[in-house]
Image 1: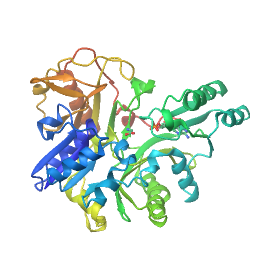
Image 2: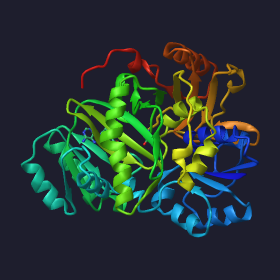
Image 3: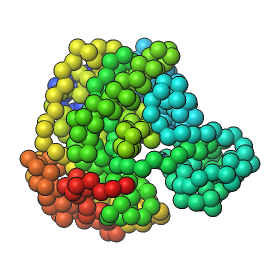
Length: 426
Ligand code: AMP
Ligand code: GLY
């Protein structure tokens, strides 16, 4: 088979790496890809948002399966366009991707289907939102309706912070039209976990749980990032908790979408808060998480191509999926300054010294510059290790991190430590 993966981050490198292991793959392409992906796939210089360009390429190269990484392509409707032309593509339709593309759509769906989520209100006028805030209790959460590269959520401790959020989103329009509407919701308290399900419209199976580290500094301090590391499984998601998440969230969501005539195909990612009242949905994403995918896919033993084809064809119920029980962790190495301003173009050294067979380095922001691998993004590498125990996986990953160097590099030293400690409150 000829396969095309769309995207250019660590998630897409992990997808390419796993797909490449399938004996079914004849030729693997990635658009646009990155320096690491180019070592295992043919990178093509087409943007993830250029749906016409990608469609033309898929026909030219006789692509048998297209796999979509980022949400922007999904929300723009790439799946509908490919399906209309008879091409197989793994991901949700434009309408189903609204679960991520519109917080208002998602909240109204959750409410309609009786799936636990924070109490909320929707506003399309800043004046009404501000009036509401004057009488509100704090803390609360203000969210831009549309996609905002993971930055559209403001957890506000007081009135002034909430007023600033409304002003940023609705008046200054820092996220453009994504801020035409907002959701204001109750602030939930608990531990967070990500549970991802692969769905074929009707059937689904859940992937092992994972946890992301969103803040830039150790101990979850500093500003939010795209994700500084991850580990799988997340011990906080016990069998009982997972069963509860499936029964109260995943299953009713898939059934609800099906019953409403918007069958969900692809990855449904539930960001969940484990509250004293049980699991609540914080948000849905409609794609693989980044960097969760980097620590989940190395644990997958079943052929990912078989899974994706079965999902496209509505046959997931026929499939047995097997997982490696060993834990996996991913430590993200970033350019100094990220998530703020940073410089690109520094040579990355030491990758050849990473020889441990349970460690793989996924590239997120790298570029091959005339045979020299250089930094080309905020998140640069994801050092990913499996181990018989979580401690061993952590040890291997950081041993590899120590061998790698680029100027101004930065990484957290506490990835997965949370999983070793008893749960902290709040
Ligand atoms: P994002 O993944 O960028 O949409 O950010 C969502 C993050 O905002 C979550 O991971 C939570 O940490 C936080 N968050 C969102 N909604 C709530 C809520 N209702 N209560 C508390 N925290 C929230
Ligand atoms: N790790 C969070 C996300 O993929 O949105």
